[in-house]
Image (cartoon, rainbow, N blue to C red):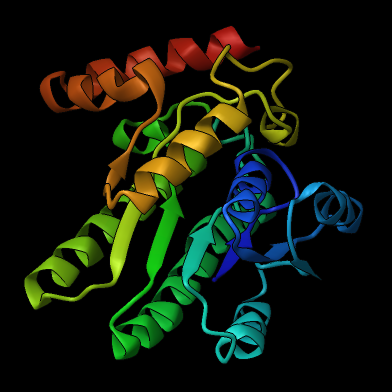
Length: 248
């Protein structure tokens, strides 16, 4: 059994890799940080193959696929992504474009290419990592929230197509809330909201994924999805803005 995990050098991706390793999966871990990948290789229970690359470059996404397509990948976890804090008029455009390439384009490419292969074999699992942020507008983190909304809608659509076709390929969507990781530092936040530890989220996500669940929302943040359906967007946007102010 083999799992390919992007964003595997820290946080949820790191801990999902460790959890799957404990269950006997060989891991292909992809991220930019070579030192953290080396640490994962030491801490994981089984065989870990590491690949250091920037997935904001499309050619690297195709390169990764070409290097893995013949390795019979059972699970793909698209976990690479980052955020950026600030008013839209002030945030750096190039950083936002890189975020879109990482959070959206890389996930889209890898999902499509590996989904095609899995369909040909009629087996396999893809987990796309979004966020409860994707259910609501996100003032002060507008591009990040929008990128996760894309991931949610894309994955929901693919999941429905798979069901309608009778495919045995499983598609699932992980939407965690705040997790104390390096994410806040990368996003430019002085401190994040309290949340579940990444290890707890990873254990829950892997358990639900292997049971065949589609929408995986750890902990009490399930309420965010409910309120996003019944409360006007104008109010959820104000609430999200208050939350972002609290982080500063």
